[in-house]
Length: 160
Image 1 (tube, rainbow, N blue to C red):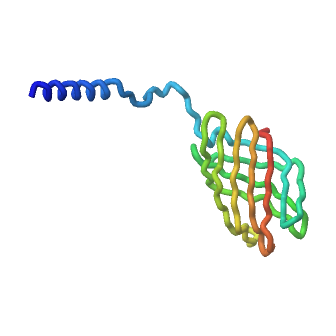
Image 2: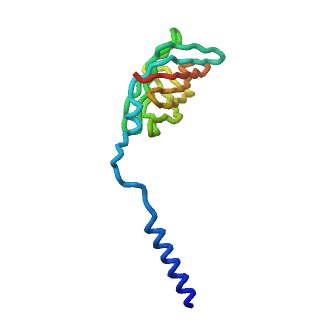
Image 3: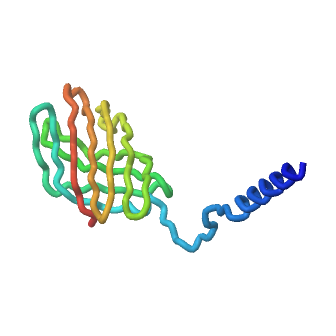
């Protein structure tokens, strides 16, 4: 019985030590954290490659704008590009989630099917982006109007 009491006392002491020395994460808010959206907001400029089927073209000096919606969401304004009869207007992709920290941020892949003011639709869409060191890599795909093929666009742009 004495051995049992000694063992129980040691177990209680061990549990007490574990609870005493366990620590939660710091509750200090001394480190100023900035919302992800604020870190990526701005105007980015760079060349954009457009692939349609087996064709590829590059447009120079394309301007992308990132606008803050709230602390973790942005609107991405894609530049107008192409030539008549397949000229595309500037397109705003709304309310995209921004994640990341420590200078590295991303917009996870999202869809943005919509109908433009012209009445033409955008379908088969996808957009994603990464941001680091004042640079943005963006990829987006879309099928515009009655166009039979999807356009795949990429750009590596620098923050202005």
